[in-house]
Image (cartoon, rainbow, N blue to C red):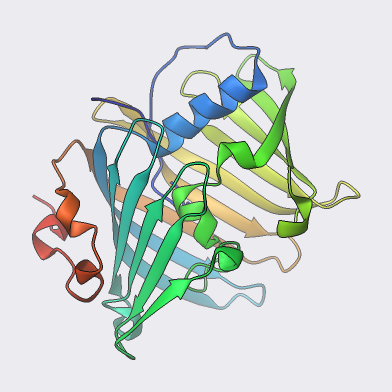
Length: 265
């Protein structure tokens, strides 16, 4: 069962397929293919990430973590575990996601300083992920069924898709436009707009590498255009189909992360 993928936070760790200059005309099919390319490479995956958070005043913070992912079904439910190793004040913080396609995801955050497990409410999925400009929702991806999609333009290199939320009361944006690479089907740039069309948030994939046969976004930048702040996430040592066992995506792993699977071979 071999598949495709991509990072994110976004959040999460980008990775993917290789459909050389795909010829597609159905917006929903393009969006679904991009979702597969972004989040479903292989049956599972592991990436080390370095995150630099730059606030509008120029102050900087750094985060370092390892992301583990396992797919329950191709294009379907997934499991995520994000384990922070640096800086010292957040070492041991663990974020866990049980992604449910078509339903609300389950998310938990373990804070070692307090020895506390917080369940993240569905309404908080679009709040900051550990102080960065990514949202919790960016890590495992926004459900494709949450929006209506329209193909605006097909250029030599990209599909340009405009997406509008089916439930606008639950999101801050009025719409967003995504440029999807026709070769890799990776979303390379997403711009979130207010009702008047003003772009206030932007995600850009700055670098792509092919890893284990999957085009992978290895550098992703999320910008807050209101404040001028941004977060740059660089993914390294990504690999796929490593045989992650289901048991490690458990509540127990919040307090006792699976060290053997976090280490690079």
